[in-house]
Length: 312
Image (tube, rainbow, N blue to C red; front, side):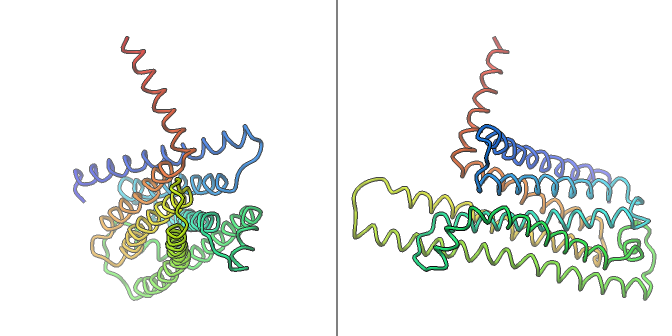
């Protein structure tokens, strides 16, 4: 790959990484400061903190992989380093997706209005169940990561990540076929939390439709906070779904690129697109939360005040 292209791609990756770290760190700091002040943490703050930490780790892993692939490709020659990268990328990827799904489910249960006994039971138990659900997501993600890394041996890693251009042997082709089947299963696993978030979004639309229809027959002229809550939750969920689709396609490119002629370029482009999801979604969450939005405005006001004082 030409040096100029490498430099441009690395600058883009560094910019996306910086924005993602800034947004997710801000979410983590605000929620943790609230936890320290009140000496207890709300369920929504626990989900947001877990999501922010998982995305910070995911961003670090993706950026590290980009830099190693471009600057030090021979590091992957032994396969041991790539095994570590694969494990943590798979782990943080699944954690990020599952925690975002937990956020979608939490919004749905807290805001939607249904009178089915199962829904009411889940709505009543969700706050106490959140810590156990998050721990379950962690355990599941660790299990999936261990299975993936254990089924990809070092010989295959040497075939696909080194820059040495040699003719593929029958052995390498067999390894690639095995790798392909594992990655397909891995990608299919990520469709389940996506489907859960999609169902939550559709049920939120149904709840909003029923609520607005009810309000037409009982119009009071007062401000309807339920509609505002529905719209805010729907914006958060739909932004996650759209960004996740882009991330999922980029993930497919990155994980399937070992079968393409320009492997290195395909991996880097896929990872650059993948960085958009954990980087931009944090700012959407900040804008959609009154607590986070007000905290961000206070920070911006303080920065503006400090800059004015320095000018004088």
